[in-house]
Image (cartoon, rainbow, N blue to C red):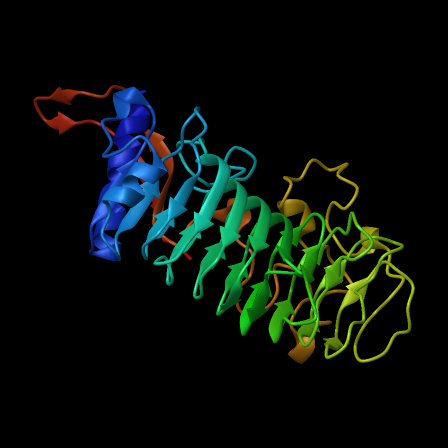
Length: 330
């Protein structure tokens, strides 16, 4: 436990050096001596522009309603499944809902595991998170949903409208859906497993460089869309750079899961994949292509400790004895 606390303190110092603003620690382990044990308390006592670091824990965190501009950072997810992630393999798992309310415009979250994220304001970024559901229930713009491991993202057909937004480089289990009032949206470089009949169903949008994996369901050709350079397992007519009836076993390194790749690494392109260079401008299709490629385990774009040797937490005559290995963020 002392080792985990020490690693958290080192990470806090690294974050403070980079962000140069008030950094708030949230940890619900009583021994952690953090600033707060709940994300809601951290929000309630923060100032606009503060950064909140939610530390990994064996105990699930409650949800929160965010009402000011904040940067909220977790350690990432699938931390024990991929190499060189975090020395402390505990995730920050938030149950219930993380809701962006009035006053939170300009906020961002990264590196968290969340059940639900609800967005009611403009200018929100959800990046490098493991999220079951993202729901849009208001008229919003400038939303960025990128580099996530998602269940689904849905813009409510009755109360939601999303414009001038980007949905990119996400691994999506179910669907990306927005009604006819939404758009323009850039839907690019996603991998959609399509466990519903509509893997990508949007309007007035640019849909490019995606891979849809279900052999029956393909991108819904709603009005106002430009659909180019996508790859689909479903049947269709090969035109505008789109490729249909593509066996997914030829696309990904471990589509069947038989090679024991992690849940996100399995979606890397295999050698000779038809998705290599098949995107607009010759980029790769899928989540690892384009200008914002997916990052395994959702590791935040900060220096992170991926290996630590701390034989004993205490002080000797020559100081604290420990060895840590740190990678630069990307």
